[in-house]
Amino acid sequence: MHKLQPMGPNCYRIPKEGNMRVEARVYLKNEMLPSFEESSARQLMDAASLPGIYKYVIGMPDIHTGFGLPIGGIMAMDAQNGIVSAGAVGMDINCGVRLLKTNIPANQISSSVQRKLLEAITHSVPSGTGKKSKHAGSSGPKLKNILTDGVPVLLQMGIGRSEDLEYIEEQGAFPGGDPAAVSKEALSRADQLSTLGGGNHFIEIGYVAEIFEQNIAHLMGLEEGNLSVLIHTGSRGFGHQICTDYSESMKKTAKRNKIEIPTAGLAGAFIDSKEGKNYLAAMACAANFAFSNRHWITHDIRNAFAEVLGGSDTDYDLGVVYDLAHNIAKFEKLNGKKLLIHRKGATRALPPEHHLNPQKYHSTGHPVIIPGSMGTSSYVVTGTQKTFETFCSVNHGAGRRLSRKAAKKEIPVAEMQEKMEGIITSGKRMQTFLDEAPQAYKNIEQVVDTLSEIDIIRKIARLHPLAVIKGD
Picture 1 (cartoon, rainbow, N blue to C red):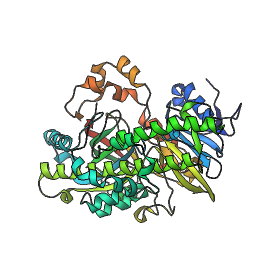
Picture 2: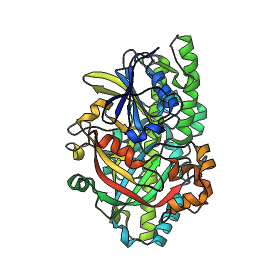
Picture 3: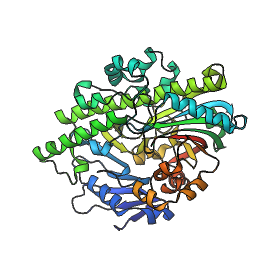
Picture 4: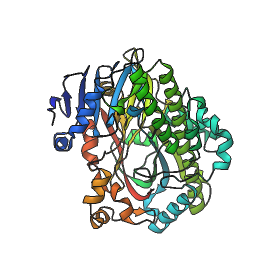
């Protein structure tokens, strides 16, 4: 394994060597070092060799090997002479997570009612690979508007609440979307609004198990013992096709323009080139699709709560705490310099007093949601002033410890059932979910503590699952 050099508590560096233009940094607790993959180190080093790379490349504590840039990888590009890479954003553009709060004490909702809620949600929100929306008739005529303008279009259609916008990254409207930059094949796959998908995507009914910062948690509407809802999904087949299309074309562009690309997964185009601008326009469309997907799912979940529990959805609060992207490239200014920051399996975390925070969270920093696995806790945290060291970024989850193939091979069903005891799943055999078993993921406590112990994040609340919907 490439030698990591300690930089300080929970932080290591990979010094420049070979074609690297900058160094790499990796945030890990000591006990996590044995699971750090040589292939992830190699991918960080490859990213550090790209033209226009700024300062250093970062690996978060949930890091694991991906396509091109590792998941849990962050790289900042000089906006004037850097490149944009579709592979460094990822296949599921704006895969992200949304947290809903409730005023419902968890101890007042029986397991049978929890199951009814799951059934009502799955009736409206198809889960699994390739599933189509039940709202295609409504969304189809507005599709291009949604791709350009995002969630506000859904609000005009009567989907969701106007106050939701303030608590969505980019207010649910990622700038620069242009459907003309999207292939016909990708557009043909844009019929999946309010669908969950497969893999690690989920809808989770849980509860606030622990509060660490009472005043901030109260500001977020999180009260100990109350139910919560997590929604984790992205741009579905639409975003996947956009990444596929541009990854292929960027390989040709890089070769034609003699851009030095270490691996196909990091193929890119100069940001100011036609190819670069087209990708960013298509990526913005996928980001708006993903925000709209989570927004429409929220609408369907609210209706499910009203259907099962009676009354109106507002009776149970079900307000948005925050919604943020995991796989994205965004123009941001750091220290007065304009950068294009690629976050792949990483989350923006703006510190307190940052001008882009929602007004409600201006003095605290916006909520950052870090899901664990379907059998373990998730965390709500905020960034501190030290997030500037990580380009205002933190990890997006626990991160895989085992590949999907290895998880299915190594984890016995009985062992997974034991880990999932007391947690209701969406009526499917455990065998179906072996690749998503809690044992396939890193220890969420170690992952979160990696950054909290060095004051990059503040822990606000811990959530624990009660009932989970997963797609196969």
